Length: 164
Image: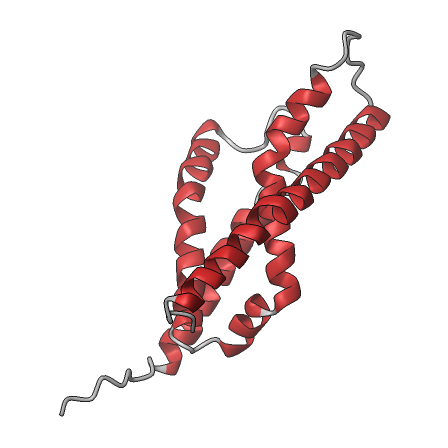
């Protein structure tokens, strides 16, 4: 009988993937830190275009490397951290807030007839109100839509004998 056991990848490949994924994702997250606070930008147009174009490819490549290492069981600490139930709930709520925040921003910004006077205080107030409303809406969506749907799915799968 043929064995379907998966051989572990060599250590140099695992560490190389982990280091490459970390480098790419950190560079994309913090590579432009402070770059756009100075006008004109210290980067040339070619550098800006290259960064913007390649960052759209770099993030999923880095994320795919992390996912591969987790799915293949070669990054148990990362997998354990990402599978921890409080982070799963936090991830669902932040994703829902990400999805609904444009609606919240549109509603807040277009609910006034007074012109916006941009200032540090205005940015702080706006950010805080957007965060609060998007988080509240995300929580309501999770409680009223996602959690009941997940419970119904678990119930249906349990009746079919498919619950793992």
